[in-house]
Image (cartoon, rainbow, N blue to C red; front, side, top):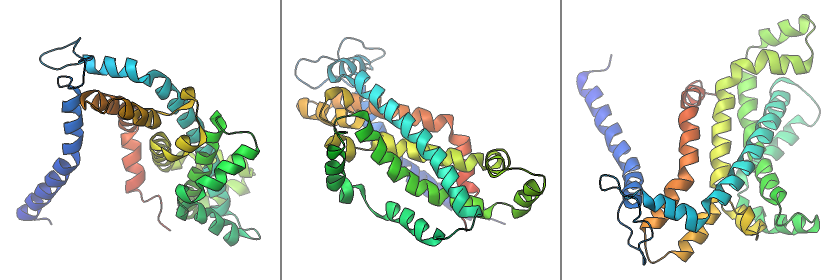
Length: 275
């Protein structure tokens, strides 16, 4: 039984951590809604109750964030769908099946988790250039699929290893095929783990900066974080439009997380990575 003093101490600690985490966010949002401090004051057009909402319109138009957000959404959607599907299948194979070379193959997947993208960016660039994929959609999406599948395999393997063996054996006795056991027996109860993986992959893909920076040169293929970096280089005289651009880039991730928040937290609380 938790005493009142312990409960009060927990609330104090959690409040302090929440304030520490929210302070930078509130600082950026307040700066984005403040008066434009750059030359020309481009964002002063629309002001409501002292909030300069025109900063977002100015940043959107000047920074061409519509193009960047569209590219990021396309890349993120492709990476999330392909990575999650491949992770479910590979995690199911490693978690429920026994085959020759299983341990070696799984350790190869783990190398994808331990190897930072900075270590493989340069050789990956030359490989993709040899294949003629540089400055294309695939040069941005495919490397991130490979990086995400490594973690996704580890995540889903742990979940399937912890799932009930009796359910799998009962399905096999009833004549269910391997595909049916995966998608109709094991996948529905794994929804929280799958949603958690989806949210993580989406956030990682959306925030990826190095791979798009190296792999593309066309402005139409720049992702939102990369476009924000170029926007920062053009508007170093003022912080307001940069803050507005940062809010624009971060908004899709926040919306996506809030939409799947309940399943995301449930997946973490269920301990999807327990052995």
